[in-house]
Length: 329
View 1 (cartoon, one colour):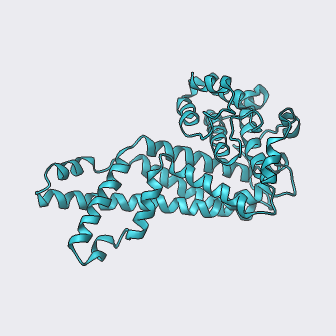
View 2 (cartoon, rainbow, N blue to C red; view 1 turned 90 degrees about the vertical axis):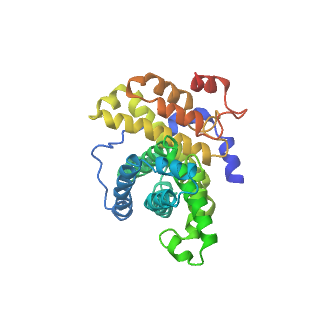
View 3 (cartoon, helix red, strand yellow; view 1 turned 180 degrees about the horizontal axis):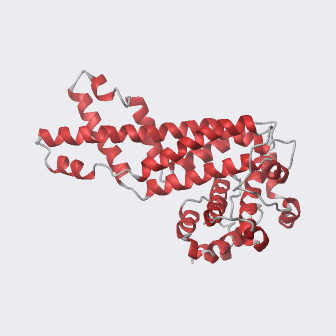
């Protein structure tokens, strides 16, 4: 608790001097020898993340056959078709859930490397740019996954139908192995909790970060929160500062910086004891929101909505009214 209280008493004006912003070469950075071991492990996870997003983008669901089955409860043929159609979809959803467990296992490796006490947050992010990029890619994946999940209601509908039907089938047959061979009942229960959240990957990442902080008693909590704040501020300055921005060759990298900035703000809002919107949070939140408003030509409305609807402390009394109004406008 003492470490948390230290965060509340820090001088906000000290932030810029402490950070001494650096340019992170997201487009060309390569892992150093010291980064390589962690980098290789995370890179394998990130490759799978691309497949996860590709599959989720193509997820069309079984709304039609489920509707037919519900409207015709005595038609066994329609019941069986809906069940057979939803099974592979639930197996697909299980794959996404199990990937969240893989991220949950590997994210602490990045946090340990980027938040250790041997360097300041600025030094970590300057000297370990390849790992910084990977953490940024994790955040980018989390935002994209949750956005796809939130905008595709058939995911929740498919799984809810599966749960109801699976329960009925278990009651009428003693051969439960036939119905649950691919998705065991216990795993289905965990999946249900996962998909119940509007932003399940963010929930996983927030919980993982909080667990990392609580389990590493020898690592001051401000090491982690400072690292997150520095990430957000660096990404903002890389777009805000004309000199830095001119060094970015690809427009997709600029959007990537904005998404990472938003992702870190949201994560920090769930992890930091006072949230990301308070004056002493360590993040220049007003400048971050203004920057997003200035980049309307880059289709950032989804990022503004993410700050509006997936943060935790936006409506707290500690959030300045000017910040709240700027974001809600």
